[in-house]
Amino acid sequence: MSEHDKLRDFVVDFTRLIDRNLGESATIAEGRELVTRLVAEDDWLPEAYAQPNPKYYQQYLLHADPLQRLSVVSFVWGPGQRTPIHDHTVWGIVGILRGAETSVAYAPRPEGGFEIGPQERLERGEVVAVSPDIGDIHVIANAYDDRSSISIHVYGGNIGAIRRSVFDPVSGAKQPFISGYSNATVPNLWDRSRD
Ligand code: FE
Image (spheres, rainbow, N blue to C red):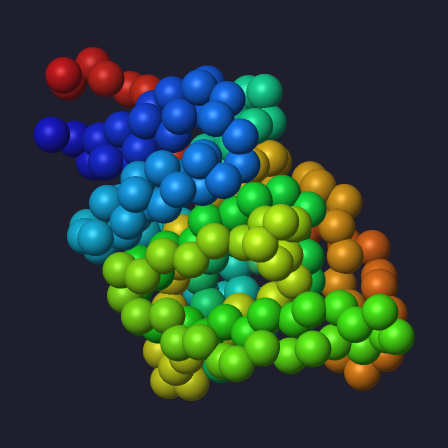
């Protein structure tokens, strides 16, 4: 067993799932099971991809599929940090690895502004999904204001490079947004010389 085994196995399994071209809802259903297994134990995320930043929540790319069908990202939330209201444009699966988070869904109203959903609290090990079909606009926040939380996100595209939107909470006005990533290098999953 070496340090990246769990993450590599997850990437391999998810790539096989994507290769089956099951369509969005079946991919989310099976993908949720893979993410549930990955976040069941908090013993595999390398330290470098678990570091909070005092100013902004961090988005560390852990793996991107070469055909941009898939990306795996660790989100690290410092105390009290939250996203703006944002969309994704592709499906996404979020699993809580450490701490706890809150999630609020925003449904655009035809006349402008949003229908705001209830605040859900996501505990360690819980998994949720978003997509343009099932609801794509939300705010995620650290549930704690005295410690970091970490979630693992999988998306049906290279999420850091996708042109998407953030929204004004009152008017609902859209602004273009491309999130990028916080890291310049990804974990080396492929040195298997010790196996
Ligand atoms: Fe999101």
